[in-house]
Length: 570
Image (tube, rainbow, N blue to C red; front, side, top):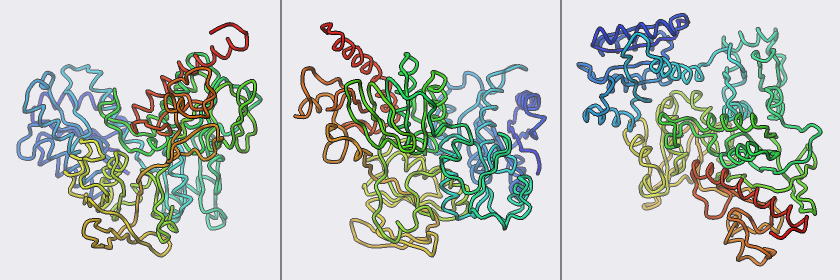
């Protein structure tokens, strides 16, 4: 295979020369660097690469090119090479130029570019090199190769294969998925030492060459996590200051701030890092990440940050029971046993509601997915996909899937996308020719022979039903909290969301004696943050904020507890 291409397009020969010099110096050993002075020549090169199957990693183009403008050229790149990173080249100081600023913002809004890039102004411009390096890194995570850190070999439509891909993606583990029987899969199996692939009994084989070459046949989620070094069991330590239930944004923020302030923290997560946010392909409205970042990357950063501060994690494990005792709480964790905590933080988030349509429920994992499951996108290249949901997660999934699928249909109950979705996503969806939007609509049926083939979309206003082709259906409708396991002392509203603060104070089960803290439930010492809390704002930034704020309340509760036990007035 040819080396991946880094392409720069600029009509100014001096500027192009500096860009090529920078790219060649930093990336020339592993990438093919090419410069073109016209969009026509660049487009011809990109089309030739697509025909040959040559990889294209990054394309940067000056905005004001003759013929096709830079943004128009990069729009073609999005179709020809959907994984390539695309950036407009602008000169220093041009952000004060209104036409340039408007053009960049418009290209960002409709998804023609990933971001803009300031042209190098000298022979040594570390900011330019760093920005390109970040683009290269992002692109490299999409490469399918038998030499990746983790290699999964399975049938293309193997439900367990889907589950493993989703687990690896959401835990930030770089991997490649190879279809069994393809030359790449045969090569990978041969390198594993498997001489007779047909003799393998399990539907899925996972190879981890990056950590000693471990080979796992049909592994459980816990097997995968343990093999990669993510803990699913505890050592001798069983006594913690706080147990956090859930490793979504709220739970991760709690673990970071609590462990950084000296509290002994255990985080228990029943599935994978990040919660619902972990499945988002691109979050662009989170403070400080102007280019955006995936939910799995945000979760992975939070996990690493908390781990460095000393927090303990148990993934693929579920809290089954909580009992209040004189010295705090006893927490029962499945397969792990009992742990003790002085206080508890509920950050278990919510789950997407099920469709309840028998013919589609039977195909769960076989074309029907609950959540974004962005790991499935490449496997749906050239096929028809349907997304059901009107929130930001659904919008992000649509735009990610549209990079690969032949057509993506978005089905929403609302009369307009803007009723539940951020405007930047609405603008980009409406500008994408590969997306069809069905407003005031719902899914009422569908099916397939072992794999999803069709879904039935009904217009809620007219009642007209339409059967459409669909090899993938991604369901992101409504949400219900995971709170049925909680003791009756923790009062919830009619939908199952946990009451806290003033809402808890008004409940007869609050024991009295003092006012509950803002995020404290009706069970003193048990707190709730993020989506699981009654009245919460369903946004990543809000969940992170609540997870950080609750730590001061934990300190206050523990201080009050010490005062009560010592007999010192508060």
